[in-house]
Length: 365
Image 1: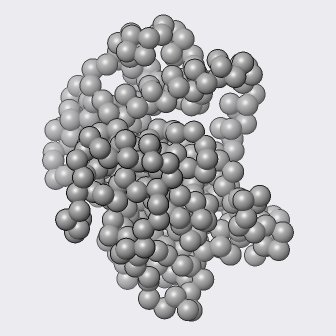
Image 2: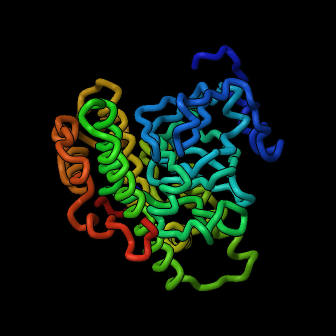
């Protein structure tokens, strides 16, 4: 154990190679859908056939992107985005954006995209690319981040998000899923101000968690030689790719290390140092979050879902679920949000307040 509507299709075997070997994906103007009343709105969206919008206000929008691996649009990547976009990942894919190296992202992650950014993607499995997204109007994004609008534009030298990938904590994972469920299931209850306030709190908590993790990793950093650092990054990314594809498999630390041609001790140390998570915790979180997706959409029984994502039994799945999310699977399904401002856990609500300078359990064997 570990510590569409379009008929355009392409063979699975050619999609991943196309996405990465051809460089940055060319922008396709086909099927770019402009939302109504753009003249009066501060938020500008360009949606594709793969996007579904759940709620839009003057400052934010919530939606979902689903692109099958066989779809030709998968090979084209995504972007450029006309606004800031935060993607809460539902599937594991390898992405490359902003000139940075390729990185594996999974339901354990959220990706942060600056206005004008594009990214290429490579399939790790047949699941394709599936993520919930929040789009932020420029003025709203600057206010949430506490940036001065006159001195902080959207040029290459003044990006909103310096880092493109952040780890999503269990508490914020639940808050995001409940927010999306609320606007989807009870669309007439929440006014625009309530939705925007909930989004602002979620984003501030997310960025606070990201900065805290970055600080911890920096303090532990050993500053290896460039060639050693490259090998370590590659090792972490390949481990994430295997776990993303085989999260439900009975894969031991020894098995994983053998496939990556390294020692178990070295793999465990490098993964923890590079990702901020222990391998066992990473896979456990991944299994639980895939279980949440099946709870929401599959109609399967709780026990069947637990076994499907890699747990030994109904009780094992329920126990781990409660330990990480503070409720059992049945309670999660029954939960209905009464107040959007109460979505965040108590300890995170103070962190979600506007900044003062704002302008407006299983062990390794």
